[in-house]
Amino acid sequence: MSILEICQWLQDTEIGTAIRESVWWFPIIEGTHVLALALSVGTLLVMDLRLTGLVMKDRRVSEISKQIVPWSMAGFFVMFVTGSLLFWCQAVKAYGSLYFRIKVVALLLAGLNALFFELRTRRGISAWDSDPVPPLRARLAGFAGMLLWACVIAAGRTMAYNF
Image (cartoon, one colour):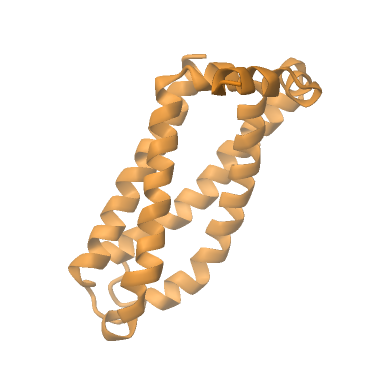
């Protein structure tokens, strides 16, 4: 079974059809997806801006992270669930979309950026936590996060308007 055939099967399931053909479910799910995106990426933007040393230079990175990450993770969870439902009901269109593929690659790279930051860069945070401008590695993680999430959003919105 090819990936396209799996996408066709998924889209044609009772749930996929119900979401796609519903007057209410599709817009509710899509609206929730966009709101969760704003929560998740909006809070991550604050963290990334601090990592780059552009804002809140007088606040510790760990303090901002402690306040922001729970909100960002909650938003990401809702965004992931609603995004999966949106894919489920239009899997064939998504599979054939260049913008969807760009979005997935950018999402994976954003995840790798966050993982690298958590596993490597954050280890030495005690040495630079209060610095107005964090070290290069942290700044690069912040800039990469902003760039990658901008790509995710741009590709996702472009994909939505090309279906």
